[in-house]
Length: 161
Image (cartoon, rainbow, N blue to C red; front, side, top):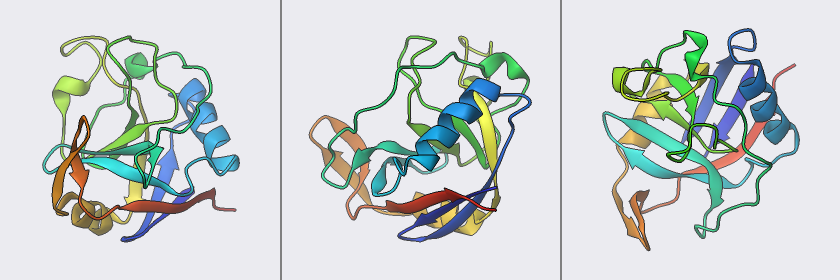
């Protein structure tokens, strides 16, 4: 179980290592290194997703590891509360950024419109925190849109023993 302490409350996250072994190992290595501590949810779109895991409060992108293989064909779906890896248009481009689905986003699933986005975990506790984050006021920051006007910080993320 992963604990994500944010400036708005705590989420508990269950990983799916059997279905997404590469993605889970990648995510866990970032968690173990403390990489996510102090990053923000830099993209908040109500009724869609919360995206984070790569930018600081000053909107600086953190240096990441090499991209990983996209495991979107693992049978898991982008349903409410699931976590998926964010990526560019290149299929195998995910590094540290992830998003939490605020609703069922079928068109992000494998094969719906393209290869899809790899689901690797789900929120098991803290859905009310997830929904509260979705309600924050957002605006534009440089070329980034849907940025919370007050940073929503991932204070600390760790593996619960």
